[in-house]
Image (cartoon, rainbow, N blue to C red; front, top):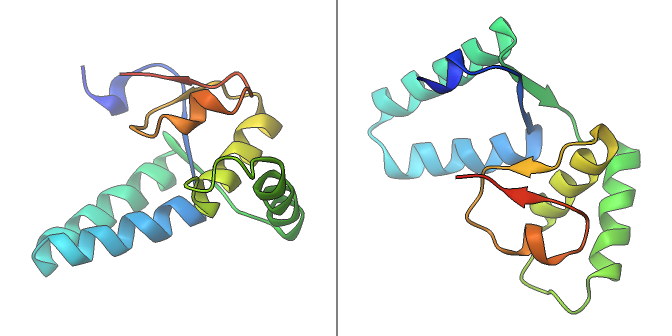
Length: 112
């Protein structure tokens, strides 16, 4: 079953897309990168990928997490903004290889 045909909605943020777009255009031929960008835009348009914006308020909350998690300096600010959005929306599951999502004690669970 494809990701698109699964039940529920997946979420991302503009900060995550920033990193994704940078990576796509750095690693893929231009045509493949633009095709990937088109697929992401289609997913957002069709509603099976929900784009959450990092507002000024969310940005400030992420700064607070940066201070709170001083013992975890390797957590990127983008990941901190994702944690803010996840906590706000009650999202526990995350598709990631980053172990720190489960190490921060906010109830996040990595999914395969």
